[in-house]
Image: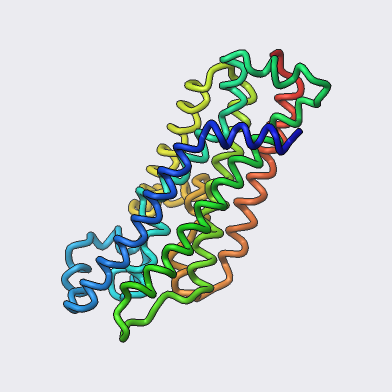
Length: 267
């Protein structure tokens, strides 16, 4: 039953998922082609001079000064991160759409537990995020083989893998939050609006905390803080393991709350 429900949800979101896969993989190729041209022209100094120092600090010094850094930038480009997160938000709010459209009556007409609806949504949202991250990693390696200069140092496979995993887990965290909200409300637009705006607001808080010293303590409330891509790129510490644990723990709390709320709500 779980597989059938998940397959139906994937079929409904198929167009969106295909478009996202093409967009994200195409963006990875574009980033590597751009990095190749900058490398060939030895224009990293000129590029770094165009980027404000605060943004360079957020992204890490390696990003704008080396082929390795620039070729990996697609994994933590602000547009990519927000697209990833908002896609997870949309997929995770399906329970609210089912209530709004009356589909929940058909879904639960059979003797199935309510928890199956939450499990189905988790499987689709988490699986889609993981699949998109995997496709981005694969497209990165293929683009490197196709376009990278022979003399350039490539991003390590370990680095690409860690970036993809952490990006997927970040999306899982917001998917879990969206699922909890969707378990409370009766309209998908409400769930998407609340969760989507929260995702953007928390990203702005993250940027503000990184650029403005008085707001620095606020960094801890933004999930984006725990996706420390520059540290992953440099592989200078194992702090990513702690950060990954924070994201997974927060995700688990939201998921557990979603199960409880959906089980008790009035449908």
